[in-house]
Length: 253
Image (cartoon, rainbow, N blue to C red; front, side, top):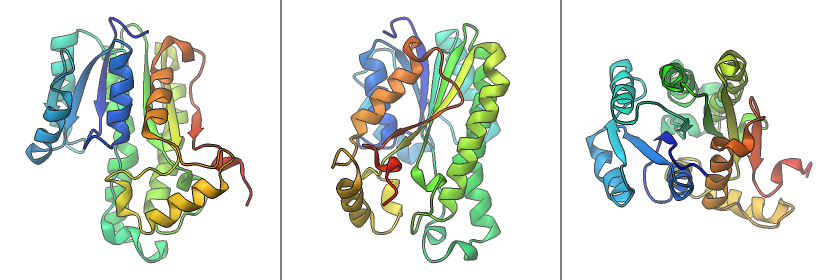
């Protein structure tokens, strides 16, 4: 499905991350992938996961550093020549901002959460657009906390709401270049990032009980949706937030 296609994946942390599940689905469909890691501490994890992927390209890229962003895309241009899709699976907020009441969020924590979790999508889309010479697809990862209040999610919910709004504005801006922009709102998963949110065990139990499918979503299901959105099968879809949560979001109570 994606033979002779080139993509870049941001946010691979370990084998449980949504970014890695997406990468596995994309590589399995024939795509050649580039990956980024935030710093040297995380490089070994990404290298160990990607070592068996043919032609995988690795670059250090802290998305709040414009020079590293530019260098990462310069390497993609040099090695691949073009870019067909981008997966944005990045989110961060200081731990103290995911505890207590949202009203107590500090300006610094708010700025950090919004810059890394939401603004980075626009920054990466801006860098990717010149390389998407044959059109392309940009996919990011959201969560239901963007729409409804989730205890302990706090400023991250606000950041995800901004991410979803950015998805729509970017879809409008980039449509003239035949670049589609969509987001996946995944159900809760026991990832490294999710462990920063309190009561994850209780949240998983509640979702499994309330969701129409009576279970929690699996990372591979989110990855398969990313594959769909990066493939020609979704050529008419842009500006959407697709829920992959076993139907939890449709339930009132």
